Length: 163
Image (tube, rainbow, N blue to C red; front, side, top):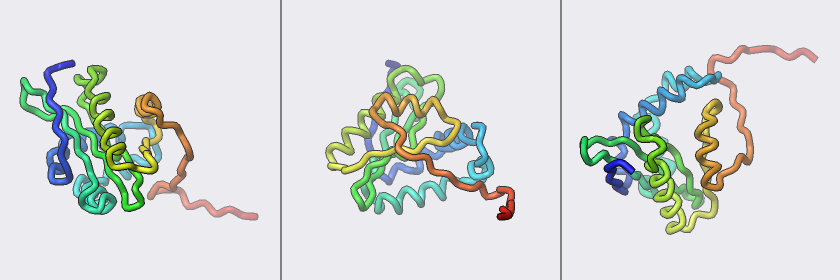
């Protein structure tokens, strides 16, 4: 592994992940999807508010990966536990040049161990359509598709169905 230091923290560090989260959002925007407008208009302050509300402002683990030689953050993982004691890997991103070096694997290990310590009854992760690499990554940690949620994009065609 490269010279990376891992730091586990809480919701107070959310602002640190913003530049990397914006790269993740851009990645989703570039995927073939009917929801590109959603990602184009989604902001970090909105995402931060959702995460804080969901975790009740406290049950959140933010694991950061810092390149010790360069002194920059190169990856993060945000994991929350809801009031219903459901753990979710909400967001994970690893800079491209740090992929396949064990950074993402270490972030997942930390998230799963944290959920173990908290005694979560369910663990889940949502993957955007078109992000097949992420599906394969999560399947390697025992996550499997359970349902497919369908949504209409904001700019959908309003078709009338005649019987």
